[in-house]
Structures are given as C-alpha cells and as structure tokens.
Length: 269
Image (cartoon, rainbow, N blue to C red; front, side):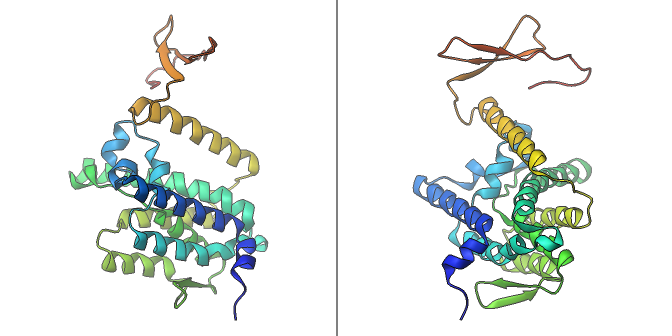
C-alpha cells in the first residue's frame, strides 16, 4: 500500500500548488466559458503585443482530459522536489519551472517565426498553443539526464522508463492527440536539456525573484497595451520628450516618471 495522499502532498508541496493552480484556472475557464483563443499563445497575437499570453497559455487547459494527462505526469515528476543531492529540490524546482514557462514559450514563438519567414508556412501564424505540457516535457528531460533509472507513472497504471519518456511521450501524444502541439512539447525538451546540461544555470532566489518581478511588469503592461484588460488606475502617456515614458497612477495625484537615455534602434512600447 502506498503512502496516504496527505503525506505525498507534504513531500511535493510545489507540485501540489501548481496542480491546484492549474485545476483552479481550468475550473474558472469552464465556469466563465472562456475559449482557448482568449488565453492561448500564437504568433499573430504575440506580434500584436499580447506578451501576457506566454504565461496564461502555460497554466490554462481547455479540456479535462488535457488537464488530467498533464497533471498526472507532473505529479509523477514531483519526486524532483526530493532530489536535493542531484542539485534539484524544491527551490530549484520552482526556479527552473519559471525558466521553463518563459523560455519554452519564447522558443515556440521563435520556431513559428522561422517556419513562417523561412518556409512561408502561414499555418503557424494563427495556430494557438495552450497547456502546461512544455514544462512537463522539460522536467521529464531534466530527470532523464539527472536520474535515468527513474520511471514515469501516468494515470497510476502506465509506467515508462524516464530515460526514454520525453521522446516516447512526444510521439505518443502526437499520434493519440493530433491537436497536441509537437513544437510546444519539443521546445520543452530542448529547454530541459539546456538546463540539465548546465547551459542554463545559476538560478538563485535573487535571480528568481528578479525574473518574477520583470515577468509581472511585462504581464501587466502588455495587458494594458493590448487592451485585453483595462487597468483604469494606470496610464502610459508622453512627456516633454515623446521618446521618454511616464507612468501615471490616477486617483491619488502622484506621477512617477522614468528618465532613460534614448538608444538608437530601440523602441519603448
């Protein structure tokens, strides 16, 4: 008999929280009847300034099957939180989850850009990606390098050797679920190898908090700029020099100005 669920949750606190967040977002999407096109990431919406979709697309799931598959795999990968001796553990799990969410999302957009510009495949201009699969595939890859003897349990009855799990799952999902994003899963695998091989390293609490702060700033301002959400207390307006931005908080009479030196070829949006 396995451990009671309560004790497993205590052993996987970060994984449990992420599963709770994804499940809560799925419930909200279903309750509000929100479509994938409202939260998903596509090349077309990205070039229109919807940069916030890099985050919302990762944590949103439209179908319950999609949610269950990703969360089942993530729960099995929660063993990473106990592998401090391999340079993982809870802190690094949170640090590199943040990296996987952002970098894999940007890599997907880079792949779309290459296929559209180089091969003129316009299909990738409008295709929309949604789901936590990038991060799941990334952690599968990291665990396959760090602890190749592990096994990945799916749905409580399907067990895969972790050393082959990333590419087995990539092929399996592409066959079973034709709508699955091959490039999205592949981007997670690529970023996972980059982390496991030390090409992306050095994340500390300081850098993680700094990165999270910049993500929050970009998230809020891209929401405002794209018109997806109206932050009535926040306006971006020009000052004496139109190349310099000003942030005004309405209602309290305070104005915060950010003075910067104009850089040739750089546009501040």
